[in-house]
Length: 290
Image (spheres, rainbow, N blue to C red):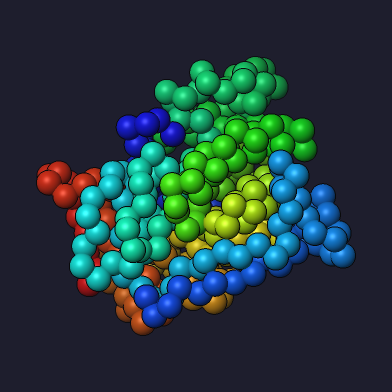
């Protein structure tokens, strides 16, 4: 992610499938459900750090939420949870989520990645997310996943040093755009590496979209959900069930907001933003909660 902030908006459809008090929990043994560990011994992250018994803070349910990955600004009244790009700082006194583009390389960062960690097809052609001109990262082998995770985990370390409470690794669903070169199992295995590392840094981990993998959230070490347009696409129930209503939903249309509020307004955290998640003062800025 460039130092000037996120270059890509969050508003496109990404999934393939249809403060009272901030809760403090203890992370269970992730390694017991995933490759690389057993149910009887503590797991370790990509850097060898233990994961069992690490305390993380989860976001409160049904709390005021703002999505600021396009640029930080003073949170509106009533906001208790905010998500910001990793280049920004947390909002004082709130529950803060750190946005990280974990599965794809942004255009101006592509050259910073080793060439063999960028996904290519059998003909050597780069595999690109056409919506954002982002090349997919090659997480198709254990060795590749470990190397990619080592780089992304440095960003996660930065989130922890800044004082964020959680991390939001975006593009979990990039395997659906890989032309079958990557699988759901590859994505889950890679996410597990990130989650272990984040938990060891006392950061909770959000599942970003990807409703079809919500059933694997425990295996992947995911603690809550950040969902785009789950009201618009009737997926909020999938996330609500998996994460016990600990769901943050961003809608990009008035109709999506109405649907989300009508069905889930008393249970989930819901906000309407503009598709480019701009800041106040922009002609395109939109933020609604009702």
